[in-house]
Amino acid sequence: MDLALLISAFAAQKESAKRSQQEVLYRSLRDLLLDGRIAPGTRLASTRVLANELGVARNSAVYAYERLAEEGFVAATRNGTVTVWNGSAHRDMQQAGVPLTHRLSDRVQGLGNPQPEPDRMLPFVPGLPSLDEFPIAQWRRCVERAWRRLKPGQLAYGPAEGLSELRRAVAAYIKVSRGVRCETEQVFVTDGTQSSLELCARMLADPGEYGWLENPCYNGAKAAFRSTGLQLVPIEVDREGMAPTEDQWRRFPPKLIYTTPSHQYPLGSVMSMRRRAALVEQARAHGAWIIEDDYDSEFRHGGEPLPAIQGCSADAPVCYLGTFSKTMFPALRLGFMVVPPMLVGRLRDTLRGLVHRGHPADQLAMAEFIDSGLFARHLRRMRALYIHRRGTLERALGRHLGSALSIRESSGGMHLSAELAIPVLDQEVARRAADEARLFLQPLSQYGVMDGRTYNGFVLGYAGLADAAIEQAALEFAEVVERHRRLER
Image (tube, rainbow, N blue to C red; front, side, top):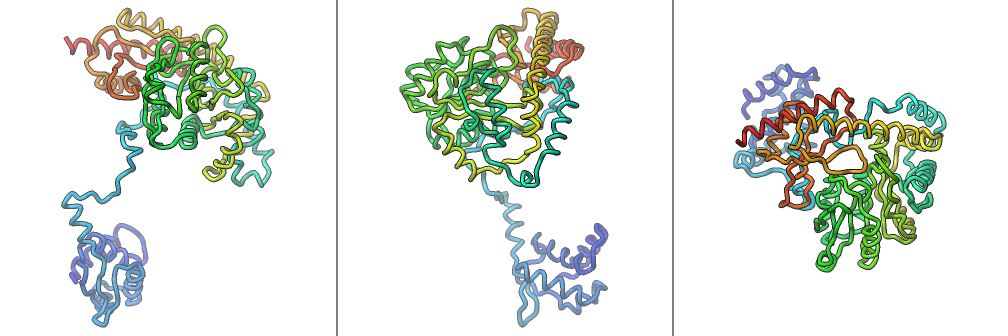
């Protein structure tokens, strides 16, 4: 054994942390073994010699050897303590470039995002509500009252389907506001839309079956379908929403159909009643489930909203998804889904084996926020505010970009979809330039289900932008576009 190596490692450990001598000695030997710097089969110095060389008590050396033996690094033999850990094999594999980690499953290949997490408060971030306008004092009082009402038993895991108070409040609200046909038992509280999507994909379809997605599409739906092993089928979108062909129904009969009919994400079209009825009829005939994501229908900017697909008929095979991330705030992490009566018992029993629901105070507070009318009042204020901010942004973009930018017609929501009439060198290059300008530009092409069709445009969120910020952001956006137009020339 190379005592000089151990003496050096022992001194370094001693300097870096305040630990007992026996702990420092144990860690020094363990690290040398793990790194392969002490080869397997090496006979270690006796505890007496080791203690004398390091200037420690013999009991410290005995402790270190005993602990290493318990962990399988060394073994006591008639010839003394001998190392049995082959750390050099691990080191040799690293040096040879052999990967030492297990690979991820095929289901999650391609789901990673190498880009760093964006600053969610940058101008144009899609889906971000006006957080500075949220009535935080009123919400805080609801939360405080909820905590006062909580009983000790409610601090344990709650029912997998969510608290009955919130489920009842949600059912009453969406019956009136969205024309959803449901009773309290059909409502299941989730951790948000992504959680709802993953539950639907896991429980309503098997790997290898076809999952239809609008093209372009919300990336969270794409991730949920892909991670559960579904074969993705992109369905093009026109001014009437999702537009499947007879050939697609015949060749790729779906098990799941994901759609955002009230405000297609990201393009903004509204699915017509004619097409809604046809989708339900075909889904019923093919034994398919429709996942209706009603993510921001509360913010319609003109006219009466069309009722949810779920309410088209009493036996529609539709799972209706809603979220409070857009209407309240994202960090709340509360959403819900409404399932057909035939699924209620099976879904409840399955969820009990899959999830442990928590956040009882937030659920009770949300129920009070709805029941008291505070939720409806907040939505009315935000609806008016977002109408104003969209108009302000459209006018600012018109001043700074003119005919170079075409805004897709949309009846509401929190973002607009804008396409450029002029070439852009590269949307990813433009996005990086926008990062430097402290803008968040999400290319439309990143919402495509498969590689192929591209869009020369961006999704621009406006809900969280005050008037002055809108003007400045539009100016900087125009400068980014102009810079890349000059480069292309």
